[in-house]
Length: 299
Image (cartoon, rainbow, N blue to C red):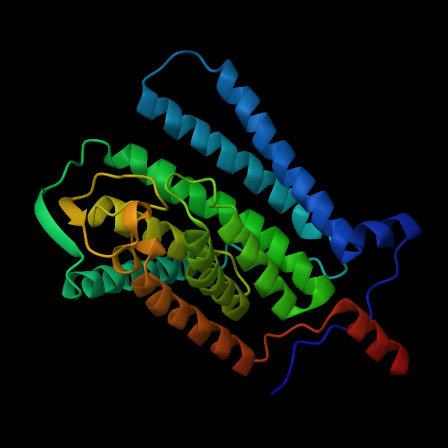
């Protein structure tokens, strides 16, 4: 098994070498991400009155455009080995692959919950807010959270501490970020860290692109909320069907939804581990920064 190796970094001025140090690059990238979001909030406040759906669509488009601009123009150039994890080449195929995986995975979770008797359809759903929820619960979270957790956090934690550190830290913080969601518990955050953190991190490791995890993330949220009427990380949604969860919380996830169930934990974590194994077999591992430096000096 071969691991991803990095050759000698190009020579730069002292200040540039400081900025390109992985943990400093992480802080700079995070600051740029926050600034782009802050500018989006200020622009949204200055917009004239309009229909709520139109406002959501416009403000979301502005936020995404600003973060994408910050990423493409600045963030991709940071670090000792600059790279673009959102290349346009192959983007539709990778995004589509992620969407398909996300749909299939959560459909499998719902199917298992139905077999276990904790999920049942009780009527026809309400799709009057479909566009709003598509934007707010699928598109925006998928883009923003993947840029933040995989495109920034995972990337530079990995560059400093190696791939395993990147996967563990980004997954743990992703789970912790959901602790303030409605009906969240420490178990639900642990479940999110394992099933979503490992799954999305594995997709990023395997493809070295954010398109697949973005598609997977969006489809996961949309499928559970807008198709199967399952709460999305504790947030109640209206799906194509009207459904109810019942039975022990360990199987149903309680009010947080199936993401906090052992069913989703087993299915999604298994899929994530499989992606990680594939990435390892392809040699998509990065050694810690200090190990790479020692190897360079030895050579």
